[in-house]
Length: 104
Image (cartoon, rainbow, N blue to C red; front, side, top):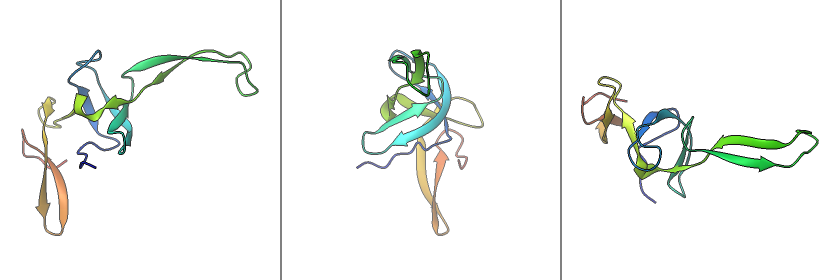
């Protein structure tokens, strides 16, 4: 398993695929499949049958997972896509932006 540098709550941009250029907040990360769900990106339509909870049924829009390799973290200083590095400060490992060298 690879070390994922994107975590829940990060603001990311899509750098490849159909949704290239879209930005959003990471809702969740699946470490085993190397995929993340980003708020408002990669929306799919799901047809649902009527049930007790939703008596009307119909078409529901929801976010589908997108591969981590298609995402880049947004630098808080320059507001552009950046690579993420890991360095040791004291006893802890911290993530930092390689563009602005700022701790995330």
